[in-house]
Length: 498
Image (cartoon, rainbow, N blue to C red; front, side, top):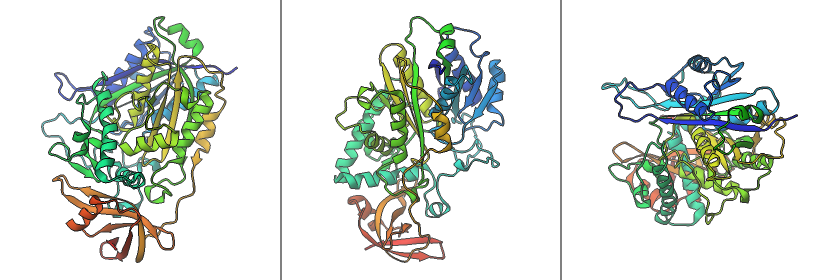
């Protein structure tokens, strides 16, 4: 007989930037978050009796065997350990897998935990090439280390802060609004996120921002990649950790605190895009795998969208939330909050592990009766991998079956990748674009994605000229023709606005 799955404990930790003690590394933060999760079970033996430990891969520090190291630290002897790959979808994906194993009676209790410690407190910290990946070893075998293609890298698109603005420019074009009106629309949404973060006990940032502050470049809010300022980006330089303990309902009853409502995991879903990279995307304003992951989670939980109390939508950038709303069917006038934490820009974006904070926050709200249920979404890389989970105060009549196994074996959604032409000479049409800014707030270069006349996707740089940058920012240029010429000397396509 299949068992019900319960979120028995949850814990969060935020390590302040200024400390009067030695800072904990990610392993120390994971241990502390795990112990806080166990405290909710009112048992000193809950951690030592764990059947499984699943680690969200840490990006700020490399551990050769993090699950075994944490188990030793906690005094646990799990029979199952696992470390995720790279991607913000990881926490919810691990929960989906652990829940399936518990439901099928393969395990009784599983700790899912992750943490990052990015803050450099040394007076002369050693130079870090990339804060996002300083903990990943060169011999890492997973192909998820790569978020963009060699062709995209050659043209200057490498990191999420470069790629996600491409979605936003396409969404701006689809809106039909002028730039200021569009920015005010997303700035208003983001201001609400900052307000929720300011009220969250574990948020990294407690400053509420107005829409005007968020969208207006300035000394503390530099432009990063058009149309995004710093306040529209994820805030990754944080020290944060979170943990949840999943258990069978029968096991949880041995540990549960009577003054809290039981939190059930009701159903999850996972899907990944057949169009993995930005340059392969058919449409920059939608995400079929996001839609698929959420639809799976809702169908498996037997809770329709309209019956959900709340959401924590993955919020690395505004476009991720806007596309999630579109894919899920959340209207602009829906009164339900889109985040429970304040999102990655204000609450904090600890590497792969943000959504575990969303789950822990939702579990707390359900346990005290503030919410009866909710949906958490999570994504990895450029809208490539998506996971979703539904949680509630009442058990569902649905069955977990082997959905998690099926999703991992074949979770693809969407169309096949578009056809790409590496070297282009001729005319084309702009589909989206961004401008990358330097630290001194001046435009460095602009990158266009578009289609050739024979329907191949191309990527190109423009000439680095102030007039071109002004043309791209003053009015949306999606749909405009460009003349493209491949420049062998720099191995790039160069586009001139027609």
